[in-house]
Length: 381
Image 1 (spheres, one colour):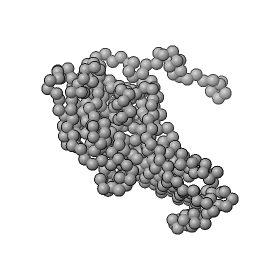
Image 2 (cartoon, helix red, strand yellow):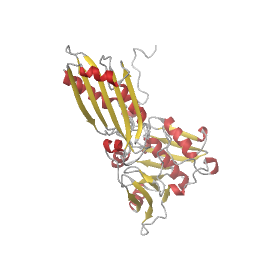
Image 3 (cartoon, helix red, strand yellow):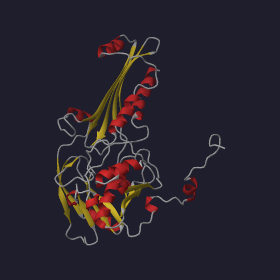
Image 4 (cartoon, helix red, strand yellow):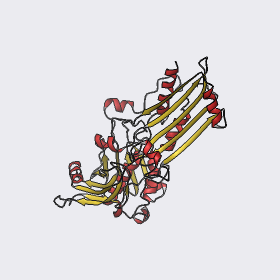
């Protein structure tokens, strides 16, 4: 008998309900060090260097900054490939190098590993980044103003234009001018935390190949990122997904970042390295749903039918591109809703700001525009 019409047990169901499922933090790696991240405390500026408290005992602690890594040598030569997280673009560094540009609060500046988690956290408190602050872009309007340039000349990561039923804007405006009623409003949605039960967690070790294991939704995203970071062939890095305690989009792109940090530390330590974020760090530093501003105009005929729809969507992408173009594409494709209309214009932009990068979250851009068009229909009713 096939699966249709039968109750098929979940592959991981028994292990989860009996408590035997092993999440990354449950996986025992003999001799593993615990990794932590030293992060920026400013939204925008320059990383000038890392000061280590001379009164702290650093004898059992490994500290890594980007300038200590043999970039460009490649894995075969005992080094690394390139200091970026491969996604849609190569704009986000794994670690901001000394002298490099800080693009958001809680950006990774240095890595620390120690034999115990307590020692790693104590060492992080004794490592103080020197930073020079610059004016920050913290709103969509400031990004569009582009007085401070974060990305290109206009701070626009990506833009789309969708038209239906008209060629020129004048035809759209004529439909609004002839409408019996026009409903026009602007809607704002904020960043949203996925709040998976298991925080971001990853481990790495070297054993012939480079091994990466952890909590993730997209192992091939991580594999692609590690090939670029390590400067190696596909078979030189092995990625394994452990039991994942929730993701909802939050473990699509960000696991590549924490995997990179584990790989960098494991190379310096010469032993496995495990990184498991505390909840406050996870909330502060990792990707969230894109905040959005949606301006929506709805033209109605006298009989209540829809004559025209005009939508302008602007999303806050944060400091780096990540998956923002894909999220925006879903948002604009859904922006007019499921309602019949022959004249439609949807404009969409996603902009760079000095917030931590925003990324995937279930619905992937559509909830922001869905909220707007359903409120418009409520008002029309």
